[in-house]
Length: 374
Image (cartoon, rainbow, N blue to C red; front, side, top):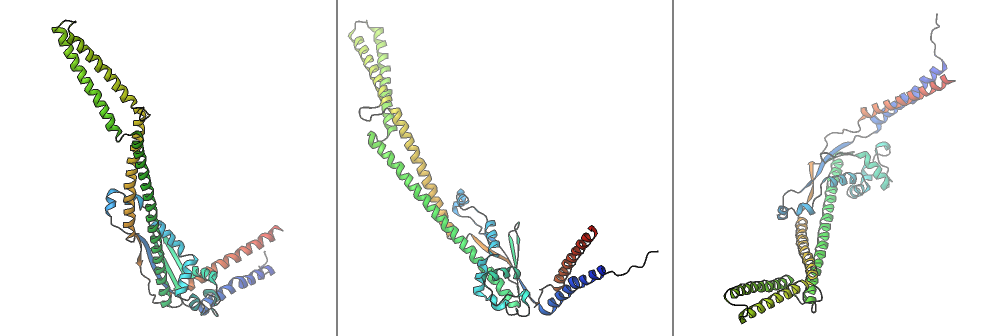
């Protein structure tokens, strides 16, 4: 028969450790939560960033969509980061003295209060305890819950959060509008300079080669060749008629032959002139001049199109600057709490009991593991 189980020293040690490491901390936590921790009121505010609708005259041509573009998603991301950094704590602290409110109960409630001599870094760290931020990236919605020791202060801080976020969006809009106008003005200045340079190059080309319009001059020279070819055709017809009606010794046949030879020589000379141009005056042949002229004309046309596009872009940027393109839309105005919902004592006590028990259990398992390995 096995002997009756009896309490051994290690069992008494486990029991004492459970009382000291588990039961006592749970009792102390419960005492603190119900006897020391002050009630906290929660005010909730929810908002998102919306982009102004409507269209301008430039949207019809698709210009505004090319230069304004963008999305409100990045603005919402900026707001989410702003709500967690030092800047918003400083802004709210200048409106509502955080130390005066959250340090009033520090003597008997240090865990949920702010030290009376708290510096900026401590305020920022404490901000994460009283500001609970939820961000739905898919919908672009931000919800902030502010905890305070009274309902009026909680709502006032929530209103300050909403106001500071609106000011940040306004600053982002102002910066974006200034940048759009600045860049559009720089593009217009560059387009004007390009247009001026292309026109100057074309004028210098005409002055250098003593040709106002190369295409018109070429058409004139080709017109001379066409006229001579028409005269040659008429002279050939007349010579054929003379050959039928007269003999070869007729002076008119000789004169007609001489006329045909002269016209043909002139045609060849004019063709050579068309190809080479007046090289004694302008120095280059027509193909070279024509290629250079066409390049200058293309540059001028491109500069004119760039100028028109830059001018339209500047008009769109100025029109967009005259109105607020993004704004903060509050789908949940700062609420006024009717009753204290925090701290959630039962939940906190349950979590404390859970983690302390788990820690004690792990220590016991470690102890027995070491004991059995010996």
